[in-house]
Length: 306
Image 1 (cartoon, rainbow, N blue to C red):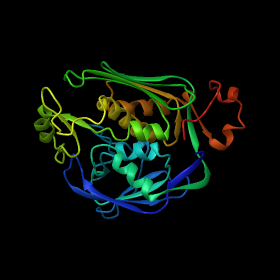
Image 2 (image 1 turned 135 degrees about the horizontal axis):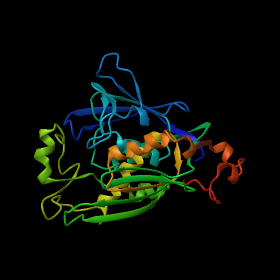
Image 3 (image 1 turned 90 degrees about the vertical axis):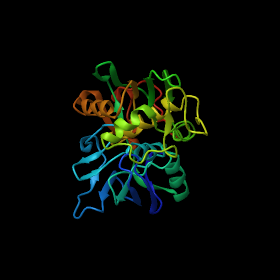
Image 4 (image 1 turned 180 degrees about the vertical axis):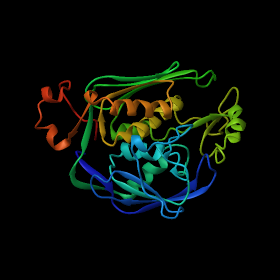
């Protein structure tokens, strides 16, 4: 997977936005090399397309939003995570509402959809966002960092007082297969005690047991239980991948997060882009030609793909 990829054909999906509660149809189209991931609100007259980048991120409260004001698309992180996880670089998305459908609260539906639709390989080489020196951001006791590594790895920790969660930690080495099998099916989660507060803030209007793990004071309410014993921290990895994919290229680096959220992920990416010495963008076609000394990478650079 050293060449850019797109969808083999148009595909559509309809569902509910977890925060807006609105029924939305999302149409995804193949796109040419270096197009990236772009969204267009077709329910807004003359709305400009929004490219999924670190700079176009707007609100980051309980989700990642692209754009500002009316011309914005909310809760893009799961879709972006799956596109990255399947190595899909270029897609044009038309959406007739404010929020990407939540589906079952994980990325599994998008994985199934894209694998059934087919993925096309383009002639252009992929580009790798290679981390050369550590960058860290911190807000209170929450922090996130990215460090040099020969492939994308993620080390995340979450801490909740709930007895079903408490402290969970994961070390995840990215490959497409590992993403599909161990991360994509993990669902978003929330506490019953927070539902009224979220709804007063205009959030979680579409949330239900069909698209979210719900916990009361002691247990998981969903009758089917958890898909993984540590599904909560696995979902954090799903979110991290979606948020850092906004850097625009495949990543060779280690991401470490502690009690982080969408805002902290975006702050980390912004600080990284403001630190030119901390990264280098390298085309896959040149990886074999460049010396490791020139790249300033550890020996054995092997991009983490199947």
